Image (cartoon, rainbow, N blue to C red; front, side, top):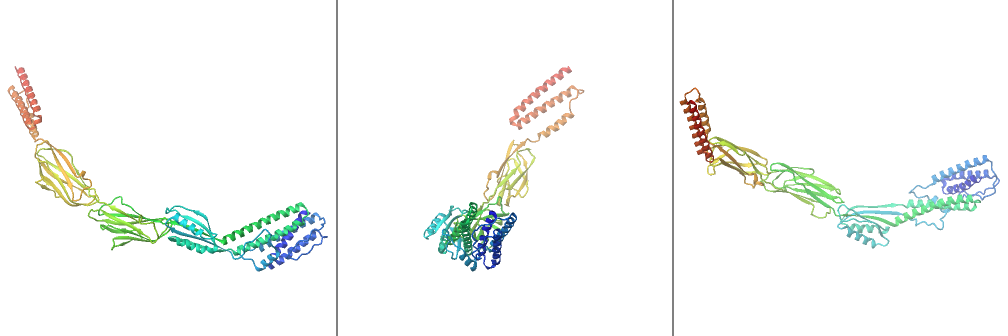
Length: 604
């Protein structure tokens, strides 16, 4: 019977205490709980009189001698006790103050009359509690110098201190931070001094949070817990067994833990209200970078895109960014990416960007046609902003476009031509540069033994130079063509050469292919044709064994004379091989005489 009875002993004073703190709205429930508790107590010990206590105090009756209940009575007692505990829990839930709301005057009066702080527990000043926090971001020229200055501001304020620092260098992409704790009454002054230290304030946020209601709520909960602790201590003083004492001690420890938790929460709120927190973020001055790209290929009279990259190389936003692309006078504007606009008066393209986020990169393009006289062109891009930047080292870039002429020749190589015959040559030419070649002059120098006949594409013969000349007013980049001419080989010289050249008013970048030399091998005059005719006659008059010996001798003699004459002629015309031909003639004459002698011997 000690288990249910002990539970009842704990439940009745707890219910009484909670009912006492409920207020008028829970009076009916409190009375029912008290009535139920008294009924249960009487059922357990009908012979023991219960001292009725006023509802607000809800003090339990002193312990007295108890009778012994039957098992059915014990079971009924346990059920009723559980019901009492359930009702107590519901009352606690209904009576629990809402977080952030101030307790009513009635609950405060009941709390003040019901219970009180223990000697070792103190509640901080319960005046109005406001927690102020602030964060500010400033742009500074030098981070270490600024950190030193902010520490000096903190040192000049009594009770202020630096709670956290994270310091980087002056790299544009690094942000340093320093956290301060200052007395609440010096909060505004400190923020203003930090604001004045920066070159620019990029962000600022100040908040105030009124925690008075939360503070009062925790105070109320702690007082209730203290009242519970006091009641438990009184119950423990009347406990008769060790087991009852241990049970109550466990409850006292649990309530004491709650009291300490509430005390800690009150201390934190009081500290936050007394000392405000300021977080300062230090941004290095950003870089506004401009980068130009050079086209892979460009040539005169072509449309070319010129890219520009603008970069916010920093951790703060840039405002009112203006990018200007100054075009060369020889460029003809055609197109620009949005929001670029062409200014005819300055011959430039202007982009206006309201804001550029930290680290943002913009790709801009200008399209223009190249129309110049071959001189070098320049395009300059420059950016500016209303925000603070490091300097003018990276906010501009330019591209230079050099132009050049590169003429080349392509001509037939060595050939063989028979003396007296006509020959035809073709000469190819091209401009492999990116600028116009003006006043182009193509010259084909003829050897002394060549007679000019005619030329194509306006080629004329220059007798003074003994050369053929072609002239072109202009040769555009990538243009190519060919010319040809007809001449006759008059000289019998064995080897002759032609010199071909091309040039323009502009200097050629690579003149190595502007000159060409070709060779010609001459074949002697057409005695070969005469030999062929005589060979045909010889074949018609060839010796026949049926003819007389005299005719045969005459034929062979004629052949020998022809061979000898041919050898003599060849020796005269071709001096280097004349001796060899003469030797052949002598050998042929010897053979001829030998054949004649043989024929005569046979006929004899």
